[in-house]
View 1: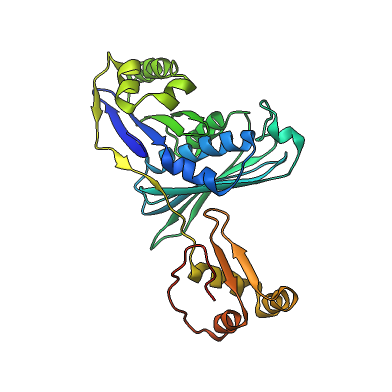
View 2: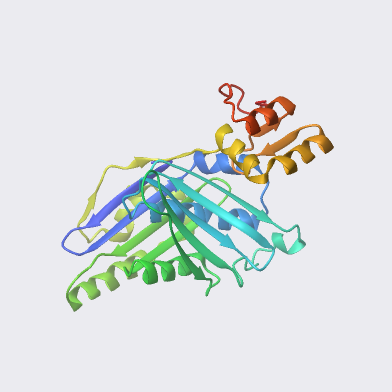
Length: 293
């Protein structure tokens, strides 16, 4: 199944799991910008992880993972919107080392996981310092500290696909369940990146857990979707302040804002700036990549 999330549950043991496959939706992300290989691989893994973590909670809003590195990686950001869509992007310094296969982009960095409710409630953010070269281990440590539920992740990505698998131990009572958790983890750890990127969900589950009783739930479709909008862009300009925005307008003739996720351009001339700071509304956007004011 392409561009989908598959939830599953082990019968008779308190362990749940998820598989995610991002195919054309992941390629849609890569079409927007040319990423160095090291950044592209990490971005794919974090994007898959964001979808997997969001599926472990009842999410009516967004869940994002943001990584700030102290190396050549400035920022990496992936966000799941509800349970059906996602977006992701990255910023980096142009260094030759970015093309090295063994570069550690996480070195000295931090990971922030933010949950933002759609309607009511305050956003929640958990912050963890990176203690490993592996994004999987870093996120597992975060889940163990914040959710207090043992969680394992397997992530892989390339130019065509971003995939992942999550296992999570649900609350239990005795040592038998600890043995179950160890056994299931041992089986899952035989998965390879190549298999995650090439096999379908059914084949992966049969290959890993053919001696276990696994219950499958309906898979959920996923797509790339950007939440940028004219209203949000207006608000960003308002936060800069009228004097600053008009100074940019005077210097450059217009104010041009490009969405880092989808590449959409928002171009404001004088009438558009006047509208924003007078509180007037505007007509709907018709051209996805064109100017709006």
